[in-house]
Amino acid sequence: IVGLSSLGAGAYVSRKVVPGKKLQSISPLRCPSRSLTSSGVPGKAGSNLLLYLIVGGAATGAGVYVRAFTKGVCAYMCSKLSHLSPAAPGTHPKVPSHVPFLLIGGGTAAFAAARSIRARDPGARVLIVSEDPALPYMRPPLSKELWFSDDPNVTETLRFKQWNGKERSIYFQPPSFYVPVEDLSSVENGGVAVLPGKKVVHMDVRGNTVKLSDGTQISYDKCLIATGGSPRNLPAIERAGKDVQKRLTLFRKIEDFRRLEKISREVKSITIIGGGFLGSELACALGRRARTRGLEVIQLFPENGNMGKVLPEYLSNWTTEKVRREGVNVLPNAVVKSVSVSGNRLVIKLKDGRKVETDHIVAAVGLEPNVELAKSAGLEVDSDFGGFRVNAELQARSNIWVAGDAACFYDIKLGRRRVEHHDHAVVSGRLAGENMTGAAKPYWHQSMFWSDLGPNVGYEAIGLVDSSLPTVGVFAKATAKDTPKSATEQSGTGIRSESETEAEASEVQLSESSSPTPHVPTQGEDYGKGVIFYLRDKVVVGIVLWNIFNRMPIARKIIKDGEEHEDLNEVAKLFNIHED
Ligand SMILES: Cc1cc2nc3c(=O)[nH]c(=O)nc-3n(C[C@H](O)[C@H](O)[C@H](O)COP(=O)(O)OP(=O)(O)OC[C@H]3O[C@@H](n4cnc5c(N)ncnc54)[C@H](O)[C@@H]3O)c2cc1C
Image (cartoon, rainbow, N blue to C red):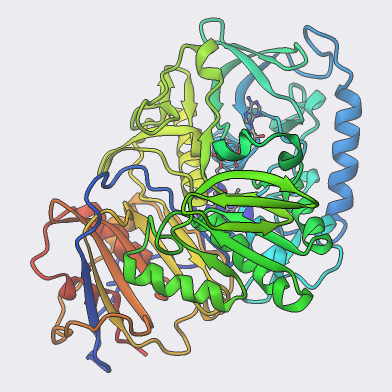
């Protein structure tokens, strides 16, 4: 099953660097390219960049699914939950009292860890305990492809079409992949079991034991904490009382997608607060509906433009216009002062005196890592970035690892970081799983993220991409091939996340350029395709590939090398941006 191997062993078939093959030669300039520089906003540079994003084909593991999958999931969950509840305090007869590998959290990082543990130790017995009632699933489609589905039952099927037209489910694996919890200890060759709808509330790291919300105790040999995060709310909304809260969505889970989808059919106006990836994706998704169903969609945020914390100003402005063209009433420079109910409507008062009337609010204002367990476990939470502090091997204590959104790790190239991206969850989960089985590997991989503003504009990014850093952008004219849709059609997988092995990354050779130096561009033109370099102390620490696809290994190599470059126009040529 492709999905399994891609998650577990990094065997992505698309975008792989062929060992020994020189990645590229520079083709002659076919059209003038342009470069733009920004000095960045002074202040906090290069830290906690949370870049996520978008569409395309969500990312991990192209699992093979059968149509009856959704029904199967429901049946599975019901049977599991009915077995397990009501649970008496103390140990539950169905849950093993001891497991060799215990994974806390049932998200992307935990699933990736389960895969890699099993890849290295085929007989391993792995228990995933998840507060979420669902089996492990990927979140990216919840704010993207699922909204563009023609299937009236999409909220039930949770299947979506990638840009290349291929259909898939958001679940990493069907129920049949998992071993029943009660059989985990006895089943031949082990397996992965999921205990859904259960929260770990206490960790005794000396006794190697956890306690669940129903009182069940489980001891472990090795434990992974992959608890992800919870959406933040705005203090102004928290203060506003129940009538406002009832009309608020904090978007993270399957249930949030289902609820918002229903609401979008019932109300006349939805306001999204937040200009980052999640807010912008949801704005574009709902904007489509605005045009077909007369729904008013407003997006407001304090920055000057969409994704203003990530993209340099000129590109953020361009993106804002693009979101507006998707049918969204975008209000930049908008800081919420208070929210109240007036008549049957919500009234959002802004600090500059403006008022916005709406029926429902979606707050997409960031994430708080789930670190409640730190207290009982005595684990350190990073005071700057949040999240459990771990070393370069993602280890918090000798037999406890942390991965995904909840990990504040030491990036051996870029320093301490916490990253809230799908690819990072996959790669760090996988690495933690490897290290739980004795690999002792450092986190060397620079995770990427992607974002598509519909099928025709997209980008991929890596490293520290923070608009407060100085940037240099080099652009060229795009062709019909330079779109996310075309990229997924060419790769045949729709997978926008990729993760080659360290050995493969080292084999990427950056060829010397022979192209003439591109000329400096004029601002405000259409940014067809290009490369944006983010600099810290003259070294490239982040790269955005704008409408350029399948070149992430080159970007990764540039960051890995960490060299000062005299002329970034020359470096941009490595990406063949002038190729048709
Ligand atoms: C709508 C949406 C769209 C996104 N789109 C993109 C994208 O396009 N590109 C991208 O790179 N990233 C995207 N992201 C971010 C990406 O999905 C996350 O970075 C990723 O899911 C993190 O994985 P994780 O395993 O660390 O955490 P999660 O996926 O959040 O999983 C954490 C799990 O732990 C469980 N849990 C928490 N506490 C406990 C406990 N005490 N006991 C038991 N279980 C517990 C939770 O219920 C959950 O199942 C998106 C996120 C969202 C919400």
